[in-house]
Length: 378
Ligand code: F0G
Image (cartoon, rainbow, N blue to C red; front, side):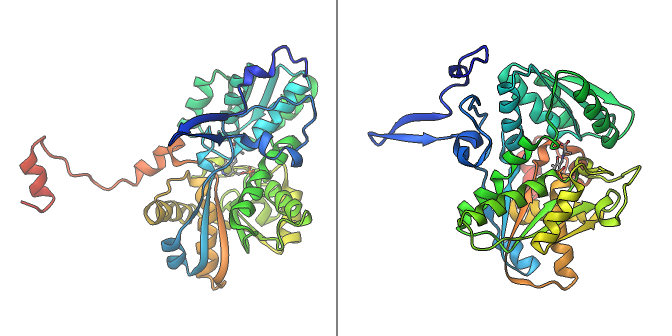
């Protein structure tokens, strides 16, 4: 038992619970990333194992969308179903567990919103201080609300994400506070478990994985996960890694940093990704590509995913599907391929963009006949 100032009992029973169903005692496992993938993670006897219920997200097969895009088989990996509504929780639980193990009392990150929401939540669960630095006016309100309600120390800077990250790197070097951006390798370790889940669900790796690229940690993590399962014999193939940046924030595609990145997809409004070289390696080793999509393509894909599959994602998350649509329209043949699009975060974090595209509603008095007539049944 580690001496962390509290007992592991503080974290409950790792989500292992029992209930009676048809007179039978049934065990429900909600083990979370740390306990479920212990053997693949940097866990020691002193690492506290806890969970807010991250991981084990749905992989939804979408035949209607597949037909529209002329794709053999299409699955959406719904990372918005994580406890704080994005994939960040998978990595954050590992980073925070390791920070606790190392005796940290505070964690710190720069963020376009999701990392800060996740850091704030896990810090609250573990009673650590979370300090977050976010670019003023460039993060979705839902994400800001999360950081506020979880009780993080919030600093907004008059600058962009890249500048926020520079500040955080420098201050975490100097002060006793753990950096929990994806530069922290524990974040990558946790996030790779999404690749494990995809293989565990499909029984094999897909032919292609489409994924949005911002700071480039997630594409790095997925590739690591796919490689590790391949090397351990759990998968016979490795997917082509298909990363997509937003046109106004596409440093990797353009081959140079972008000083003033601009896109409606605020989560990936990044001009100098921390894991740039690792993303390029994932692309090249997998025979994939890193390309870009316009804001219009992102918004159409967001709408297509909502109306064609019932999935509401935030704009940045739609870059994966937008990329698939773009390549398919440009003549790449997916008709015999199995494709997974990673849907990185829920649309409920950023309702502003969706509301802007609202058609006019029927506005009527509270009257049955009036509603009936307006619906054409009168
Ligand atoms: N999708 C969403 C919803 C994100 O929040 C992010 C990154 C990405 C995709 C890109 O992932 O950075 O690993 O390439 N959000 C970070 C944040 C930067 O601060 O929340 P990446």
